[in-house]
Image (cartoon, rainbow, N blue to C red; front, side, top):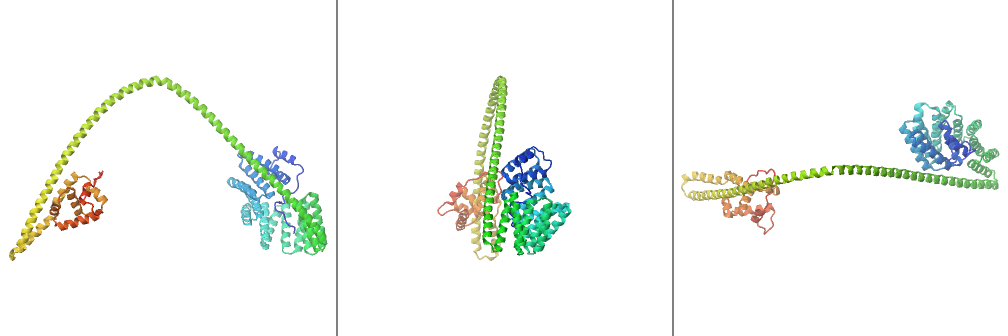
Length: 564
């Protein structure tokens, strides 16, 4: 089996005779269907890829301008195939994916399936067989659903070819047989030719040369009927391979020489290179090294020429792509600049008109505005006088309120002091009574001890009653509003006893009187002060009384009530 060259699919059936005729045909719109346009474009792309690209790009821009999405997808597809034929697979995949996106959005299943087959072929030549197989399977699902024999034949053949290259012979043969069935149903002779050739290739890989020769000869007969001259060259070369592999070197040499002559007549350099290479192999097996060397050198030189030409074509095509994209970018920028300039001019005109109108309005209303301003100034002066009088009245009211508050505060302070003195006197009296009663208890008069002990307990209980402290707290809150609220917010662990001690310290009451008011000894007071310092977190040497005196009271909108 002769080696198949990448980038030269079989649908390039013949060379163009005249590039200018094709250009005139496409640009004049004389073609009446998409298949005719695509065929002509493929022929033009054969030898003039850069001209073909410019031609398709013109049609693509027209389709975009006309917002014809399907035509836009068709031309994107053709650009992708153009790059594929030149071996630029990355660019080909990019354009085919753009076309596929349009066909998906347009929900055109037939175009989408055809594009998937083309994209799968490019993936295959780009050595991405898994992606190629995924595209072929998507196309196959559509053709199965709509029972399109022609599409099924082509897709089954593509899938079979992938399995053949993976050396999965059974799967390859199965899919090619399915392709053969649907190709016969569609009476597609061109597809039948390719499928028979594929079947021959499968049997050739398995060294079943009789079956391979049968299918190759059948494919050759169909190619002659359809005048597929390039296909004939490839099949004749394959027959030469079969005869060579079955040791019939003379017969194989005849077919290879025939393929060489046909390729030279048609100018098919790829097929010519393959034929020369196969002739060299045959001469080597016939133990004619000089002839083998001659033909292998001719094949190598021809291959170098082919790749040099292809590189030049690819460079010319990529240069054309770059130039077209650069020109498109420049045109886009110029159009954008024109739009910006038009907007600026229009905006300037509008602004000038508005300025003129505003000037006329301003001039016409200026006198009225001056008159209104005079009237407004007079009204403002009257309003200012009235506001000034009101402010003065408010200031007087505030002064009176402040004086009233000061009087109330002084009264409350005196009341708080008097109330504190009353508590001190009461507690002193109770303390004296407690001492007298304790002295009586020390006497041996047993009949009075029980009653006296109960009386002493009642006096002790009276120290802990909160009635006087409730009155004290109410007066203290009036004199020092929000003091307790700020304390408990900053020191939430303070108890009611702590708050009482702090309140008495705030009033600058002596330690002796504080002990009397709280009903505790001086030692207990010192312990209470020490614990309070710990809760507040005072450092050593810092005065507790001084801290409480300078502790600020924060005004609260809604003060909380705390037990003292």
